[in-house]
Each structure stands twice: as C-alpha cells, then as structure tokens.
Amino acid sequence: MAESIQIYIPPLDEGAMRQAEARQARLTKPAASLGRLEALSISLAGMTGRLDTPLANRVVFTLAADHGVALEGVSAYPREVTAQMVLNFLNGGAAINVLARQMDARVVVADLGVDADLPAHPDLRSLKVRRGTASITRGPAMSVREARQAIGHGRLLAREEIARSLDVALTGDMGIGNTTASAALICALTELDPKDVVGRGTGVDDEGLERKRQAVRTALAVNAELISKGPLETLAAVGGLEIAGLVGVILEAAAGRRPVVIDGFISGAAALVAARIAPAVAGYMIAGHRSQELGHGAVLRRLGLTPLLDLDLRLGEGTGAVLALPLLEAAVRTLNEMATFDEAGVSERDQEAAHNSPHN
Image 1 (spheres, rainbow, N blue to C red):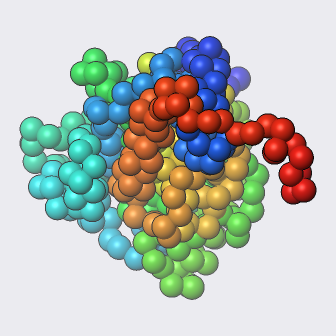
Image 2 (image 1 turned 180 degrees about the horizontal axis):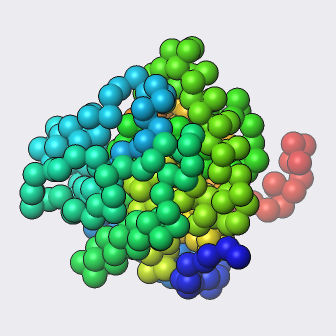
C-alpha cells in the first residue's frame, strides 16, 4: 500500500482571477497585447487572492545534498564539490548569491544530506537526514521514512519563512550527481525513456552521458517494485534528499497561498513529485525558465507550465527562478498601475470600424 502525505492545498481564488481578467480588459492597451504578462498577473491573483500580489519578501531555498550515484562516474565534478559549493553560497560567492543580490532576494541555504561535516555558520540550516544517498543503481536511494523526513524539513523551512512574511518562494539546489537522480525520478514518474530525459548535467562527455543513461536504466530496473507503489516511494527509490526537501518547500508554500517559482531540471523533478502527491499544488507553480537539460521540457509539459525565460541555463542553485522575478513584478505592476480607458480618458476600440475592417 502506497504511503501518502496529508496536506491541504487551497483552490485558486476564482473571484480574484475574474477581477484581474476584467481589469486587464479595461486597461489602456489593445486586448491581450501584453501577452503572457497578462496571464501571469491573473494567475498570481488566483494564487494570492489579491490583484496587488506582494513580491517584496522573496526567498530562494537552495538545498544541498550528496548522491551515491555520483560514484558511478556520472558527473564531470567530484562529490567534494557539493560541500565546497555550500561554503561558497555561505560566503556569497556563487552565481545565485550575485543574482539574488541584484534581484533583492534572500538565499536560505540548507544541508539536507551533504556527505561532509560542514562548519557551523549562522546562515546555514543544518537539517541533515543522512550523509548522502545510496547509489540508486544498487537499490533505493533512501528509505521512505528518510524521504518523508526530508520533505518535512523542506516544509519547516517554508513555514518559517511564511511566518517571516514570505511573499514568493523560489526553488534552488546543489548536489553532485543530482541530474542523474532527477532524470531517474522523471523517467519513473512519466515512463519516458532515459534517452529522452538524461542530459549532460555538469558537462559530461559522450562516454559520461552513456554512463548516466545506463545508471538510470539500471536504477529503474533495480527499484521497479518500490517505484510502482506511489510518488513518495518513487522519491525514496531514485531521488535525492535535496529534491525531497524541495518537494516540501513547494507543498508548504502552496498550502500558504504563496507563488512558487520553479527553477530548472532538479526543481522540476521535485515539482513533479509534489504535483503527484497533491495535484492542486501545480496551480501555485510558475516555471522560471526552461533548462538546457534534455528532459526539462517534458517535465514542464507534464506540469502544464510554460517557462518565462529560455536562456540555455543548466546551473541550478535557483538562478533561473531568480532571473524571472522582474517578469512577475512587471505583471503585477502593469495590472495595478496602468490606467483604465475611463481613468485616462482614452477612447476605446471602435467596435463598428473593427467589425467592418477587411482584415476581420
């Protein structure tokens, strides 16, 4: 019998969405001329229940953990880089730190399963479930209990930030080997073939890519029985601790009616798990960008999400999610700050002339 996680995700506010749509129709512009910004403003209204969606308190949850499958030669970097990058995050020297400073976002760094004893730091949340996962090519990455515990830690992080007036949650990750685990997770949940999902990750060569594909194929076969039981068991079988933590962040943020900007491939895998656990959570997701990773497009299609940006990114950390923030702000500001035709004294479209136009 499949295990489950009990969480209530409130429905989107249909009334607020209708109000946003009606206001969009009255703004001083041709109908739908702001394209996807209009749709985004309506979606945000549905998530938060208000047209003036607050976006000031923006937090990137960059969760870190190691993966046993990294020992199978699936990454261009050694496992030690996970711990080293966590220290880089804490010192403010990583790409996510630079972009977060630019976009006025705060980065929450959490150790969910780094295979190292990290030094104490005031900005590090130590929530280690275990020192990395086992290799998914030989059995489950972790126990179902550990997967549930990591999800709980992610929910705790989001809950704490909601208590501090979180406005928008952004997902991020760090973990050598995590594109392999994410690919396995995506294949398990979608039944897609590894050749259509497994990408080069940190930049492996052709031989490394084939090792990744074979590792995913082996993991799916070895863990087939556990995978068949449900999303939580699938996460335990082939996922990762930081991925599980992100599942918790996504679920808890949505439960609190906060928009969640999903980053790239690893965050996408976590979003897919979250949506299988609680389908209504997908209504609170915004795809920050489309990753260069091969299978990310398939993930977004399964979630029904269209990415805001396509910049050939494949870094993770939350970088693509943060880069999308100005578009969220633009969507909210145009909805609320533009004048309506009545307010501006601007003549509306001549319906009779439009009807008689030879182009109609």
